[in-house]
Length: 439
Ligand code: GLU
Image (cartoon, rainbow, N blue to C red; front, top):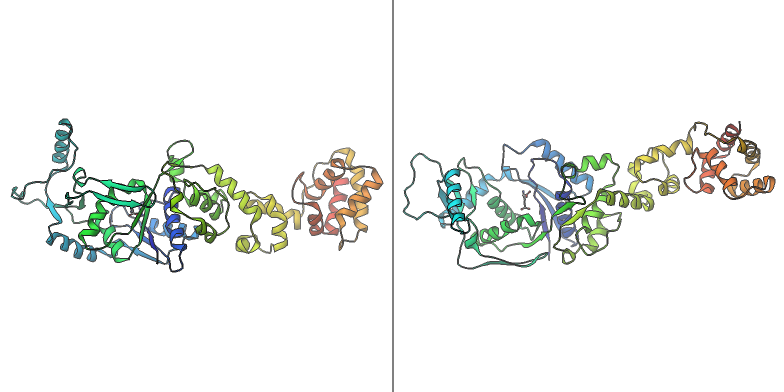
């Protein structure tokens, strides 16, 4: 059976971690089956609030994450289809014109609440007078005959009494579309098999299930995930606005973020995975819990580190500094928590290092090291030979033996394994560094 999913952002801002997570879930669900398709639907029916720059950034962000859709549709190009389906529903008596002002609706709500009744919209009798010269807005008429039920793939069995839900407004008086109906029309038209989104859409789903039925289409499978909250509380402004751009700047690898977001809120462990294929393999809606998922930037940092430390050359080659070889990457990867730090290591391999501060008691020792290094055969094991010769000549061992050498050769007290690093630095450069440090 095929799986077709969609991610449907409104282009009224940039993507943040919350909606990136929804996009990722939809991508992974589709990626699990051979013929699976992940679509991007731009929900730009609100022409005033939608911005082209946001459409562009959504597409670029998804691309950076590797969540490239097989197709992109824009609701603003589909108004004719909505019009056609709307007319059908109207002919069937499932949409109807309304004339209340916001103030009237407010009064109606207050009266009901005052009587301790649910503040749902009160339909007007069929013969109610129609005000002249007022353009109507339009509501979908919910069928109150039976409860609305579905088996949610995350939340389990769901049951709603439609009488407790207001008939939703689907079209404004200026004829513009609200979210609910176009979404259903598109889901039918694009043959979406699974709608997977945040639990803030649960009531929408109840209403939309009646719309699928009214349009004569079988509904997709539904799944609603618990919302994402920041570790410190609700998704803060900083995190809310922290999208791909900030994470990119912080040197976060897309797969570090994907690895966290794919498993957050599930009973599965969060592990750094290098590919979406690996993440898709373990993706399972049945493991999602009902409690809010806590997003912690520190966890992304951790994953980023783990990911880089084990990342194959092929997975990162196109983003390495020009000319960096596979051997160089393998040598350095264990020492970078962010890719940008590689730049700090390049001079250690190939460049001129500023002279490190060497304690006076190590200078003679390093002068001896320079003399020995100049005579060593670099094609064998220069580090082991250098250390053995210096140990024999000076009696030093352990830290007093190794630390001054590392400092003189790399300018730092820690870093990659010295044996391959020394080979890579080369005899000429190593000898020069030891000589300079001894001076
Ligand atoms: N544009 C809606 C939103 O961003 C889409 C919801 C849906 O997935 O149907 O909330």
